Length: 111
Image 1 (cartoon, rainbow, N blue to C red):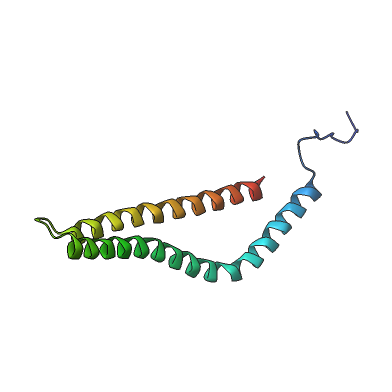
Image 2: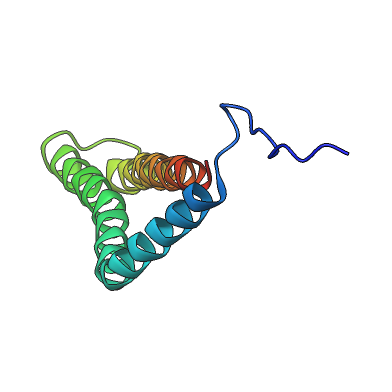
């Protein structure tokens, strides 16, 4: 029989290391839970403004064009829709960026 203690590889963390990492994750999650509500509200505000500002700018530009260069077609509705599309793409970009950052942070915590 072999009475020697089992050797662990250098890449394999020890039991104490695993417990320490898990405790650190729990402490970090506890610190971030208070931030979660305000962070979520801030993100909703960011998404809202990133849609609203281009939409309103498109409408304002359309009104100005209709007033100064009247023509057969109304610019207001067309530029309002263009501004809305740009705003939605902008919001999608921000949400995708934050989602990627959260996933990367989660993967870093799991390692």
